[in-house]
Length: 440
Image (cartoon, rainbow, N blue to C red; front, side, top):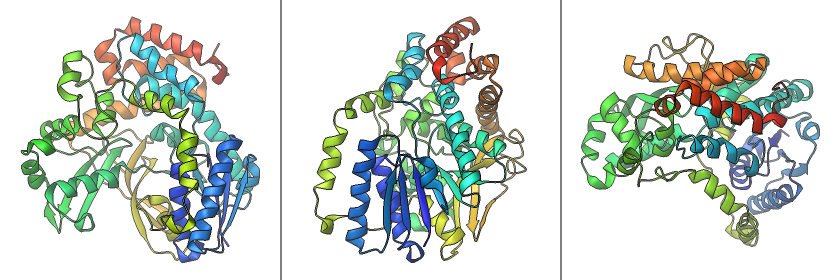
């Protein structure tokens, strides 16, 4: 029997999907699924939902639920993290304060001032989780899904180099599937090499049945219905020559080109798919709305008979990685977040990069991809170096490095002066002071 600990297991939709995927592998059909969350109400709902999966699949698995992290982690073979550090009433300031200064954000969970402050609050919690893993299940595979992915993984992998840690994001396989649909390809016939940093990686090589897919994408983008789907990142593809992995809403925040003026937001961010790219604070508005609706949505799912529970395996990486490392040992290749030691030549040594990784028996081995094309390296270097400053700020308690990390963020520096950035950062530091014990 294998044991899987879900830290932040109250993430109802995501936990349910991953539990379903894990149990589809024969090696894990009798696993213990240990759900842990600090919200007892959400924890009870997800426990009931997971037990419905067990019954529907007639699995000899065991579901446990606890608010005690140590209890969940003891003896775990695999750990999944989906926590959110602080409720919406806390992280709303990551978006609203920059807006007051003229920085228009769509999601705000990855980088820039909003992502940096989320990292400052979350890194201490993640390091505590790692300390418990090191003590209670040191051989476990730790898969992180919490954002800001790159900064969290960078901090954890520095402080706990002996743990098996990587970060996962569905944008790589999700975008590849989208591009396959544009050209009429079966996603199973599409291969790629994708590299960069989380939420800012690019398909350096993209093929359909062994042939370059990029000319077909260029043709597809001549169709208005496709051209209007992802205006921001398709525009980036036209100018930079490589397609980025993350949605237009996210990408519009990470660069200087699309959200610094109202007319540009109207031109590039008014429609399209995924994360409503034009809407300010889209994700904040969504969370505020769901704060009063999530119980009804969950109860609607729990009212379904077991016979209607979906049991088909999905495409999230986690279960496949676990299976490769301590299941039936079928080798699995994916894109993961790891430190850059000889993996991407023209990004900072030791920064967190997203590159191909091979999971096999008891092993996670990252694959070197060489150098990024120069035009991509300029963009991604700025991102990676800002993230390095932010992680150092968190680990050292250095508020000047918080300022520098924000000051060189492309969108922030396109909108504000250094004095204005300093004022904004000081305001954000002050409102977050209870989460930053080093800040005075």
